[in-house]
Length: 421
Image (cartoon, rainbow, N blue to C red; front, top):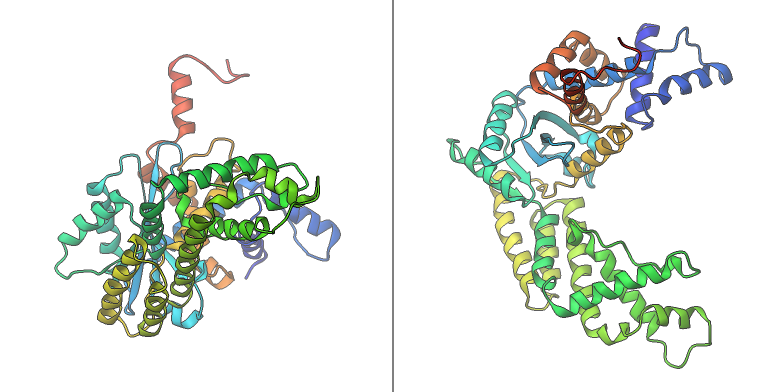
């Protein structure tokens, strides 16, 4: 490998693995050159680092082809960036969970398709899935969350297929929806969350800040609700101490921050118990997958739940999905789409550094973040995607960006950049 290739590889790995900004890469290299024995004859400009990283993503997409072994597709829409969304499809081997013996990581995934669009509905998703799977081959199953638009798109695509493809509903979203249906509309839950919000305000920036409750998310609140249940359970234990607390003691101040909290003890205990059991079931399934053994473990845990929507939904899900597992594989079945959420999180962390975040060619970061980037993988991928192809791909797949619209608007209205006559 030439020195140029080594420098290029090092720059891209700093972005993908050290998670530093593009502009930081040249500074880091200059520091290494000055303070370490690292020998580099030149330091690339940060724009070169951007182009190499995106070319890697484009090259990996160009390498996508059908494979002979069984695999599962994980699909989801990215967060909204500007006015556009990206449909992302990951490929994970059917045996990934059994080989790793734990929850999969991005190293176990391959991004086989990205479709950026401004209009998102069931019909557009169906067409995008058809295009991606025609190129990458047909999966043995699809994992997705409970989003209605995504569900409709998958259904429309599935209706056109000669062979039915099993659809796996992400266990995390299923149980979050069950907990939401069970508790959100009740007066005791509303009272509990109101107390939690008031408590957080009273405890922040005080000596008791270490007892501040978990932040209540506006969107997807029930996806991490077990933390709130655990916090409530612990607070009940602390506040249940009999007798009057010493004046100005931590216990006395905590009681002032949570007036009437112990009156909700029956609800909090019930809520915390159900959230704890759901959390345990998800921990088993996300790390070990679904097979006969984990099915029995989770079903036994579900029997500890009171008769409720949560119990019924959990048992129904288990019964439906063990049939899918027995139908398509003898190995543990992956039933979580958490990995694609993790991918979006890393992607968002990088693009948020931009002063004007937009869903532009930076979406090519997504395939670059998947797999196990090393010299042997990166060189062929970069050789398959030239800078010219990168520019042409942006014109074809990203018809406009916020920056381009701004420039066009200012130009059409006779506004020029400073310094230009």
